[in-house]
Image (tube, rainbow, N blue to C red; front, side):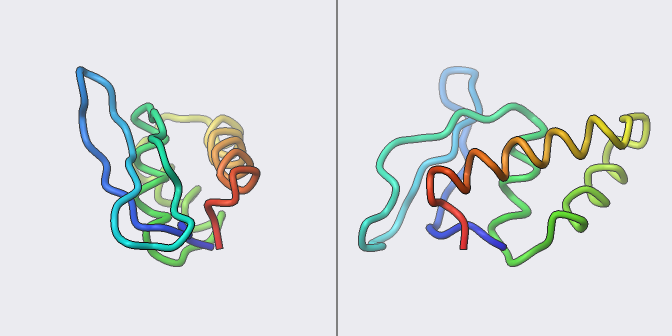
Amino acid sequence: MKLKYQFVINNVAGETVAVSVGDNDGRFNGYIKLNETGAFIFKMLKNDTTREAIIDALRNEYPDALKSDVEESVDTLIEQLSKAELLV
């Protein structure tokens, strides 16, 4: 799975946001507010990846995090992005 459109991640007024860029037909209009974990996941989704690869990368980045918390964070964001039709 990966993001359907190109996004850039920026810090705007102290908030991390992802904004769709490029000339994609029907691209996402608006922005997505992300926390630190969400931004990490979002960056991984710029390339084709799997749920398991994202979980493994997060567990390497945050070794003290509980596996169940990591899985919940990944599943929540993937579900939200899927509902918004932003993943392929």
